Image (cartoon, one colour):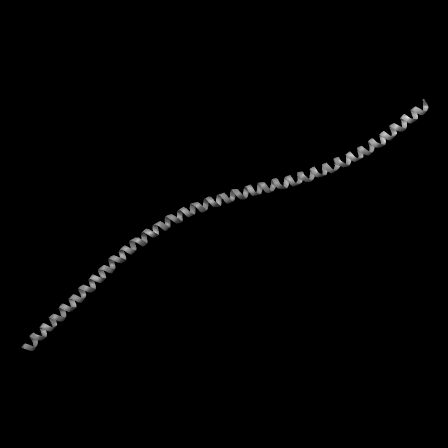
Length: 128
C-alpha cells in the first residue's frame, strides 16, 4: 500500500510539474496577448486620431470647395457682365467708325465744293 501511495504521490508530483509548466506557458501566452492587445489599442487610438484629423480636414476642404464654388459663380457673373460691356463697346465703336467715315466723306465733299467755288471765284475775279 505504501508503494502504491508513493507511486501515486510521484505521479501527482509529475502531473503538478507538467501543470506548472503548462501554466507558465499559458501565462507567457497571456502576457504576449495582453502586450499585443495593448499595442493594438495604441494603434487603434492613433488611427482614431488620424481619422478625426482627416474628417476635420475633409470638412475644411468641403468648406473651401463651397467658398470656391461661390467665388466661381460670382466671377462667371462678372465675366458675363464684362462680355456684355465689350459687346456694347464694340457696337459703339462700329457706330463711331461709321460716323467718322461719314464725316470724312462730308469733309471731302465740302472741300471739293470749296475748291469748285474757289475756281469759280478766280474765274470771276480774272474776268473783271
